[in-house]
Length: 319
Length: 267
Image (tube, rainbow over all chains, first blue to last red; front, side, top):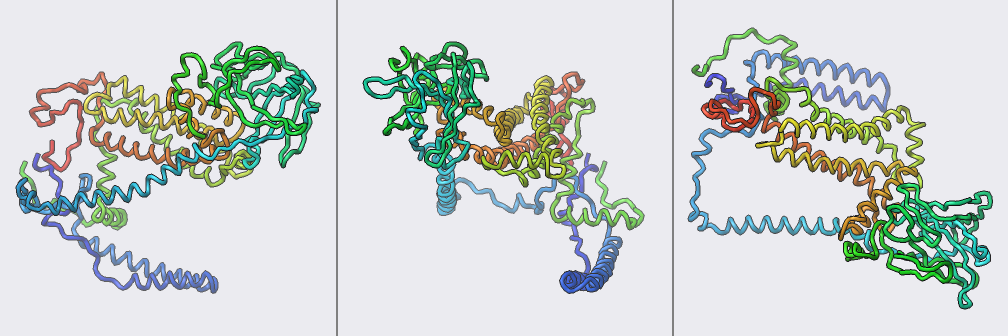
């Protein structure tokens, strides 16, 4: 067992293998310098530098090789490296008793203050960085009022698939789709049903079940963005992802959705229809302009707004 | 046997052996890296080790491929909603061998996940998660969700319809978690709705944070593998987990360990 103990190269019998002094590396360096100069001046300087560098490099390596052949073959460590073992280290370091440490509370103070200052510096760096990563997601959202066309562009009782940019600054990624139906006038004011197309299950794009007149698509440039309106005759709405189904008021009729489809609040500005803010809907009683909507603040798809499950989502994140 | 102090007589080393050994010795003397590499690679393993026990190395290889191809793809990819899809098309159709590197990254991702689960199954069925390797199981159990999250964030990057809607659904699944769900969803999409920030956020997670976490955990995983050794297969005569009396006599009382001898006398 003792015989298999590997020789520690850092032990007392160890001699470091330092190469003997040599001038060849100077010549090698000059050759490299000439070569680099040659890259600017001309190819024959490159050749000259290369020859010098190779020549002196060869001489240098031969010098080292001679050293190595003369020296006894070094033993390789079989262990995982590890730090140098100072002989008698364990004995040289006196083990302090608790009383001796008590006599030098300064060292404890220094230790604590080093850790404390380190923690403060770490916190000063980490807290703003974490805040920068997290907070922008919960602040600064703003409602944009979107003009989607004149009231006259929406014949009474007909559906239009309307797309618009929710936030024109963000570009096409913010394009949203709504199903809009003009319900005629209610108490002298135009009434609209404006349903967002994101499924209340997991947010997939709900499709109208019925003919869509793509060839009658109208594009209108309003306030620096393109609004599109496509006539459609849906009998219901259905989601292609997981089979959620809705009636024309957005109430769930089948499948996994947990509530009705979201809607947009609207305003009439002169004769223009303007979408203001989006809200979530529990259920809708009645139809068209007589519909009674249970309205909630906008929540993500899949989140219950009514029924016993609503208590699973007590806090609404700030926007 | 008594320790010998005089080394055996040898012929002077040949030029070739000097050319190979001198730089290695130079490196070893100053860093211990040669010995460390040998310690890492040439470990003792049980004699009846099984091919199934190479699944971990296979997973590591798959991850290294993902790392390499991912770095190359990042040279051409643009994480911006207006140019992301175009840059993917550019990589696939225009960049020389881009189709190959992208394909390797795409299929390698599935390979990595599949191999991770096969590796986990092997560890489970071999009982290799038992004492003293519980901690390594925990590290591996952390690597799996991070690996899956890596797949989720990478799936958005092509920025086509599949990617977009799959991410919408994925984020909203997170959003339905009780209590914190809406917060998680809003954090993931970087705002109240999916937008340009979602893409750059997923890109950053996909290529910086998550790979960093995976690399750190893999280092820990391998450290524990090297420290604890590889377990025997369950059908082994030297069954892991059995306390054998002669082991205890030899001072090797730890159950199921095959530890290489370190610095003599440690056994």
